[in-house]
Image (tube, rainbow, N blue to C red; front, top):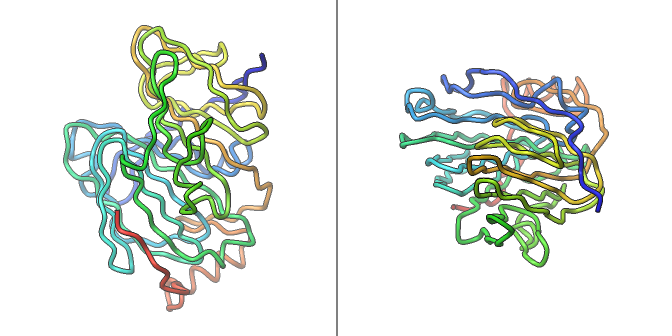
Length: 289
């Protein structure tokens, strides 16, 4: 049997973003080529609300989709259309910023805030044509599939015969995305059949893991080879590990703050529109969570 091997590991570094949120920036400007089409991955894990309570007040995005997943905690989303929605333990929110969106994400005080935000690039053909869209991925939409020693929670995409939100026509319009929230008991191991040929990684959200025989420490993004099944093993403690895969774009990237385009001219246009008006192209329908 062929397994996907670990070909690169990134642990990132501590950073402060938003209005003062303490986080770990795992993927960013220096990792776009290896992890394409995943642009940014921020991890947050705190039992102290002062680390995150000031949140991310209203700010713009263009040219990307953001997926925020909370293993634990609560986050409230608002956007320029007046949508207000919340996600809680085990849930996620998906924002297609597309041609331009303004939103805020405000974590609420909880016993523990544990999760990630992932930026998924949009193809050049969709950056200015994709209509802004929001969807909260709630627990009743997330299938749970038993596996050896644990379970797979299907946040997006598909796994074996189970279908996530992408296959209900809600997401995956521009790039497919498989997003699995995998839980394994201590000393358990499992083999997952995953889509072949895609750009894939795992992120060890909680606990150290072994991936195809390679140790991967907690809070690490491990890039995987493109072919084969996924072999995951836990050590002395239970683990929660995220498997994320999509399709490489291999397109030029021009990135400025919350905007990711293909050329410097497109970035300058976005900055001009943020300053002088015209950033929001159309007020598409958003969905409440």
